[in-house]
Length: 158
Image (cartoon, rainbow, N blue to C red; front, side, top):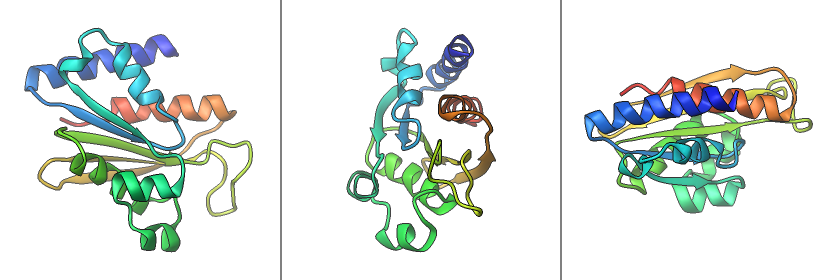
């Protein structure tokens, strides 16, 4: 699937470059995998601004401005946190759009409300627009993370 992810990242890069836009990433459960796939594409420096790997809650607060209240009320794995991560990546970069991911890749950490495989993916855009989706991926830790990267890249709307 890495070949598929590389192709998706290349398609994204061509769209961003053609529109003169840049992207930033804010990643928790994927640990920088989205940024890795983007930077595998030759010439990505023209359209990739930066990536934030904010695995811990303090990192989400310090680097992206996620509110403590949001983490306390909704948890790190939530639509609200994902949205704040995406908007924080925009606020702390020169990017025109951002993608953020937070989830439970397993094998532990799931709950009945948020079982292993629960992932929230958010996209933020300059001007304040944003959208968030919840996914329920199946598979092992690697497969859940891989599916997250795929959806995060292929669903960016420019």
